[in-house]
Length: 269
Image 1 (cartoon, rainbow, N blue to C red):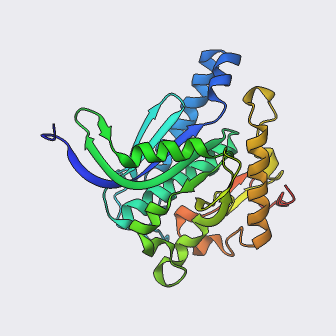
Image 2 (spheres, one colour; image 1 turned 135 degrees about the vertical axis):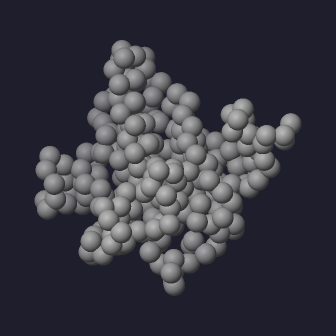
């Protein structure tokens, strides 16, 4: 069985496009495919370094420009990301990619829910076989949540505690991660690290404008829970970098509006 595969431990991110099935039933398949193709093409473009020149600060200066940050697989409305290796840096690359993809998807009014888990995996890339606890646990945790967001399971912090420290070289990582009471379908919220997609996202018309008002999507309750998260982040006052040019290129602001900033931030939701 393992002739061409490998037993390993990896960080795995399972993402689900919310409202996808209803969109399929309400719109022509060609229209849905065209929009989805744009999103996946966009994701491919950000799944690798972007550096204007060698002088631009980067989180991953040694990463080859032609190599993806992580493995990515798409099955209908499910997107699976798997870290390239077992080490903490590979996990961080997956986190950064998932965080930025969340921002860019919302800029296109495509709501995403997901989970990141660390655990055992069997991977055979020649046969496209991916089996393991990390994948099934990420799937289960994604389905339990009742919002638009990505929870980071405690298994990730247990495996890579250095990524969650508030001092030293890892201080730059903190904006991606936020402790929050994640709303669950069970009705009882669970405190967890999450991908803080609201950080350094400049929305001209406010966070609410990132979500479609189309009743066909049927995610109004999830949107309400998500806006509560956005309000909690805004309340901290730590929502934008002080100087975008001074931070790594992977962390610079994502803006949503009819024109490029500067414009009045829609922080009142």
